[in-house]
Length: 453
Image: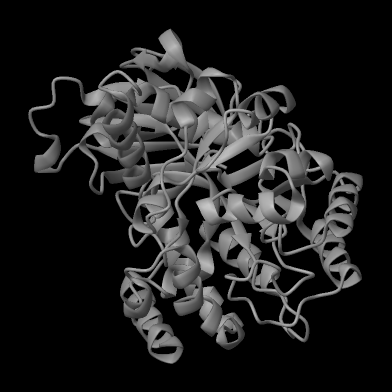
């Protein structure tokens, strides 16, 4: 691991909230994977490599808390492009799940993680739910292998179902796993990959596809207990659409958040994706239990699902993070686009002062690290992990910026990542991922699309 000095940046954003959000034009020293110093005018020490950040701004690496990497080869499938969630599920992923093999998943994961790295993302939590009875593949291992090759800090949210899908509109007709099969594979994955600690590079999470109709209530409680016994966090989808909420009220006679509380799926070790349709009565429960959200506004817009009440949640102390969701419902699955959309959409809904760029950066970096339990990640400060992105403001869209610090989020687009570090290691250098053949990856992705379409 090389000692590094990031020198000459125009501005540094810390990922912290409020007045601590900006560090000014400081240099950053990195040793043994940690930030050791942040100050103006640092001079190189013996044996220290200097990364030139002139004309750039530095952000903490984005922490993407909900993805479906397999969908990176299912973008813009025509049959599902104008469908809402259940119609899209029936037209795009579910008809293809049993046709996806390890080779498809490998190329999809490379595409998705490369896209994330080149948008400044250093941590990815992937909710992988292609598990069913008779599957002869260990896809979690494929994902960990690709993440290790590209150097991403990676969390596998091991999905799956023990029911075919109780909701009448849910298109899942796959033979489910048994509870024993599900738990046994989580135990295997955790034993092989899971790391504990505030800057873990690999984590496993218990993550059934949805708590309300992919498993029955008794099984949901068993999964929670099994996951916690292993020291794992819990994750799932929740309240993504209005008909999801209606189903829970009709069948379980309570709101989704109340249902999760009844079945041991709330707490500081739990976060849910979407939570678009949350009732007033549910917000205090989320706040009191410390249950978090992975906010996915681009996918929610694309599918016409609505927009979560994130500014209100954050004001109540509910842990908020950002995520891109799957590329099959978000064809631009990068975190800069997600952050830009977050900033814009909540101003459209709540007024020009509803959300600041600093809020969005905080949610997408330290907020994400919080819901993943990575307390040493997500902020730029001495003693924190050196997960950071150096953005080059070399595109015309950023010319004329009076406040370059907010340019990547406020300007949107594909901000150029000059350098990116994960745990102090250079994973993007001079705008490229070392060792990755992009032309070859494009060709392999095209082959996967042809096979799956």
